[in-house]
Image (cartoon, rainbow, N blue to C red; front, side):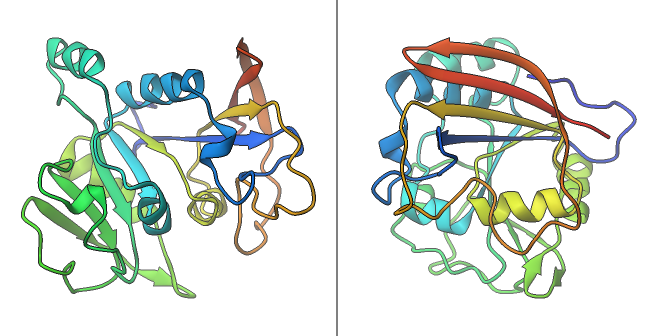
Length: 229
């Protein structure tokens, strides 16, 4: 994991995604079809180094987001004096989140932070949920101030964002991404898949990445980049 800038007023933000060789974020309409147990182990290792995991509401609806780490990594974090799991932060301008998703169920990650522009509450007002209210621009949450509050109010120094693609696009557009952790899955998805790891309106300008490291596990390439300032 890259270390955050101690002089910054916001957390370090890394984006962790998986894509096919031809750059698609789904296979047969599903993200899970691109992953493997080895990729999931890498996902957990990155989460274990983060103070918070940031995901969009659509990703929570599709993936559930209950437990974030297996027992052994929870124990390692506890031994280092950390929360057993990183904070789960769900970004949802409208608060349209199915109350039945794992993240909101009894026994889900707590405390749970919801980053939103709404002054409402989630259906059923589940206990242990905190809200950080921010502003929107053209219907999209603005994240710079929300990230500053995560650091100032919750001590968050490292954020791992796991998408979805629209959330990734917003973070890139605001210049808030510091690093990209990309797993290249050994598939060619083809033209039938349209979703890529960054979606939404065009970026103000392309973002140049600096290659840092690469690894391989069972045919999956693990690529690490730093965003050039």
